[in-house]
Amino acid sequence: MSAVNTGDQVAAQSGSRRVHRLPASEESVSVGVIDPDAPAALHVESGDEVVLSTWGHWGDRVTPETTMADFPGLRASFPDALGPHSITGPIDVVDARPGDTLVVDVLELTPGDHGFNLVVAQPRGRGVLQERFPEGAIRHFSLDRESMTTTLAGKVTIPLRPFLGIMGVAPLEGGPRSTVEPGAFGGNMDLSELVVGARLRLPVFREGAGFYCGDAHAVQGDGEVNQTAIETRMDHVRLRFSLEKGATLRTPRVETAEHLVTTGFGAVLEKAAHDAIDDLVDWLADHGFAQDEAYTLCSIAADVRVTQMVNGVVGVHAVIDNRLATRSVEDSMS
Image 1 (cartoon, rainbow, N blue to C red):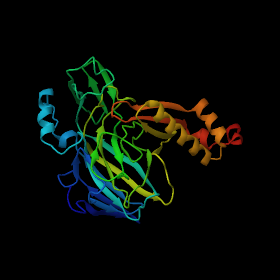
Image 2 (image 1 turned 90 degrees about the vertical axis):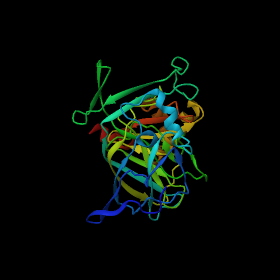
Image 3 (image 1 turned 180 degrees about the horizontal axis):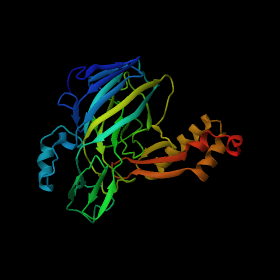
Image 4 (image 1 turned 30 degrees about the horizontal axis):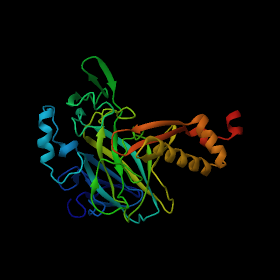
């Protein structure tokens, strides 16, 4: 990672909002490692926007010609990497302190024109059918960014729904760590709800927050069952950063136009589901429900979904219609 401020600190200014640029480069991208002590590539203030880009896996070295035989060489090219992901950042937010909440609004996303799905060969594979496909396989996709579709084997047209699989902040624990396992800091959540229009809230553990992102997905099913989505780069990302001072969170939360979404992570799905529902009960209580009312509402109106099952630490997200959380009985009858 490079020295401080590798990005364009103020690319444009609109009123009081500043827009910064942080293109993916050797100076702004790390491969396979989240280092909470890495110097910031960019400093921004609450309310600022950042236009950035991300690389695909292994420093964007997976091309349409890449075969399974190439992956040992790709891994060997990054001997210090603890995972395959290329992450852009860190971005420090001035005045962010432990106990604050970093709010990240996803404003624009444009994926690359090439993607791939990888069934990782044994013994590295973690897909749910790893014993059935021990040799692994790679399948390449051409991504049509006008129609926002791709095709699988010429048999089915798949709508694209791009999002960043990795969005996170510097973890509390010191020392470099793998990009693979998610946690309360976010990271490799693989949460398909993080499309354009989503608002992500992340707990802050260190001064500046140390935000980073990457692992772009053109589209992914919940569970990510064979270990990857359609992996790609993100040619254009526009994010807005803001701070909620003293608004302590235990785990990331997401708001979309339709839903409130809470997250949980654990060694097993039951632990992850416990934490996602526990946080949703608290969030609903913040909207005026008694704790037992909130628990009942979760059981009769919330969906518990498997975020991913393949990252060592599994993820679950709980989803509820945001109108139920905010609408009174009088409002619903009017």
